[in-house]
Amino acid sequence: MGIGQRLQLKLQQKLSPQQIQLMKLLQIPTATLETRIKEELEENPALEWELSTPEETTSTTDEYDASPDESVEDPVTDIYNDIDVSDYLQDGEDEIPEYKLQVANGSSDIEDRTFQDASPVSFYELMLDQMHWLELNETEQQVAEQIIGSLDEDGYLRRDLQAIVDDLAFRQNLYVDEKLVGAVLKRVQELDPPGIAARDLQECLLIQLRRLEAEGKEVKKAKQLIEQYFEEFTRKNFDKLQRDLGMSDEELRSVLQQITKLNPKPGGRSEGTEQQQYVIPDFFVINNQGRLELTLNSRNAPELRVSPEYKEMLKHYDASSKKNRSEKEAVLFIKQKIDSAKWFIDAIQQRQQTLTLVMDQILEYQQQFFLTGDETALRPMILKDIAARTGLDISTISRVANSKFVQTEFGTYRLKFFFSEAVQTQSGEEASTREVKKIVSELIETEDKKNPLSDDHLTELLVQRGYTVARRTVAKYREQLNLPVARLRKEL
Image (cartoon, rainbow, N blue to C red; front, side, top):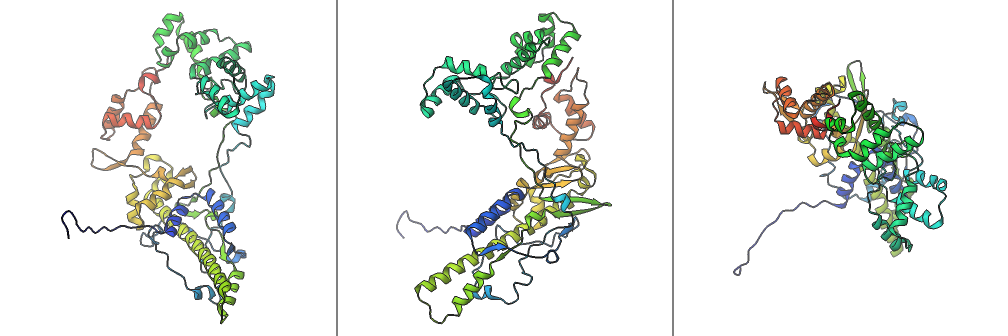
């Protein structure tokens, strides 16, 4: 071996295309699974729905005390083996297929309950429908459409007027100036919901106050406050507001109430404008007289089979003693399609088994929460804990936790809600960070708003309750709860 040369051995693990597909299939939620199955059915004629009778379908209502030893192979590391032609020609397979996926059909009324909050009309469409009220000419209409299309999800126009001028020129070959765009913007701001198309919060509030003033409401002081003292308002510098505006405590309180009733996010909160989503639970947990019962949504267990016609065709070609080139190609095509169908059915089954196994262990680990609904009863739990109980890889647990929902009598939760780090208590025990966050939230909710609790004071109260946490940790939890600092929580 020459100078500068060396022999290096490297061990790498590569995932097969089938394993990658298994990971993707495991990650998708129930709402997306049906679409994925339909795509597979369209692409593979050897895969079809199983036309079964209700008696052939069995139930899988599992209880929380499922043994950790009852594990399935991790779909991420499972190796897909080649299938011989004889595998497709087994007798009696059509009676009750081995791959028949079990479904829970004992509570269809619960499973059909989707958390629908959706509006058939999008925010963009709602805005365009109102444009005829503005009586714009053709050029102004194009500008208005461009403005509406540039609004963010909260209903604000975050783009500069010059950027909209450039967009109109480059994309629509329409040449206008900033003055015209600004004039059309003012017209768009006349639409509902009030405050729409504002460029910042101050303008959003002023648009709404002017609308109230046009309706005959007395908002003069509120307008003056937002126009001239917006920074003091956002900083809650009430002393300066009272002094400069010459208002008593009661007068200032009344003005602030007027302002706080306005909508700071006209695009996100207004009725009929938000593009909302369905939440379809992947699991259902029922408390049956103190015994928790777990049910997998039956949509996760579709009844699929390999097409009998394709198996017959394969059997026919295989029985032929002499095969020409076209027949060999036909056998190869049919085998590939059947092979793909059987793999997809097995993958769906592995998905179902993995979901149930993971949720079983989460249910057992967090039993007290599922019985009481008390967030402070949640135990510290990380992905590694459930991976150790199930024998699955941590990445597999992560895929399940990040995209699945469970419906309980206390509400519907994403599975990752049940995972949290540990906080050490003074007694040496471990508490969930979610438990500490819950206490911080309750302390702030019940505080004296005229003298709100600082982060230092919150830390002292937590220490008094036995939780050893640093001030910076309390500040982090407060920020994660979207709660402002004490100064901004202060009220008159």
